[in-house]
Image (cartoon, rainbow, N blue to C red):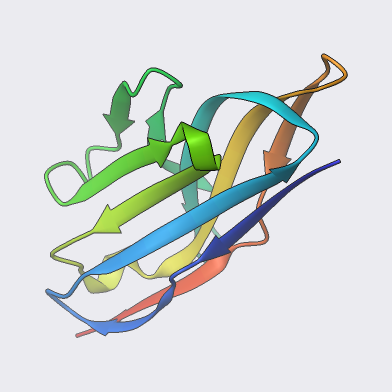
Length: 120
């Protein structure tokens, strides 16, 4: 079993910052890509940022220069530092990871989501 638990969401004024964390636990041998998605009501979930096990990161155009994704492989944790937040960044943010278990199985896994609300 693999679990992803997010934390760090909340309410912030426009221009402010938040840092999201997502910790993976369970029968983990290694974790390949770790990603952050976000979703607003009535819209599809969109990829915000991704980071490989080697630390290579990619970002959606809408967050480039404002968000930074990073990971701590020793802690099986991925972070999303969000700066210069805008009201349109408001969404439920989800963590996603491709986990290789100790039984050598691949487990794509999602967190439960954390709400980010940016007030204008």
